[in-house]
Image (cartoon, rainbow, N blue to C red):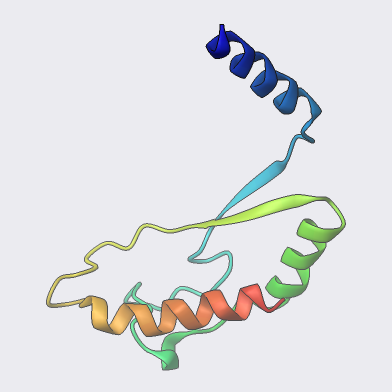
Length: 100
């Protein structure tokens, strides 16, 4: 009996919740300019797409979307692209976007 009651409460909660629109955004070429070697492994290679921060803020605030950044990092963790070079730049990028 308790199980059925919990399910009913959960369904009522879901019904009351506002549906959230989510926009999945590819990182490379959309949020940041992709370098020729296709790896952002240093701060020197990091370039945000012009107007991107303003446009993402508009989409999130005015159009009520939750933004999710997605990215496929081929070679991450290999000798050619060690994680130690990836994380500092990646974390800086996330902090920058969070601040907007």
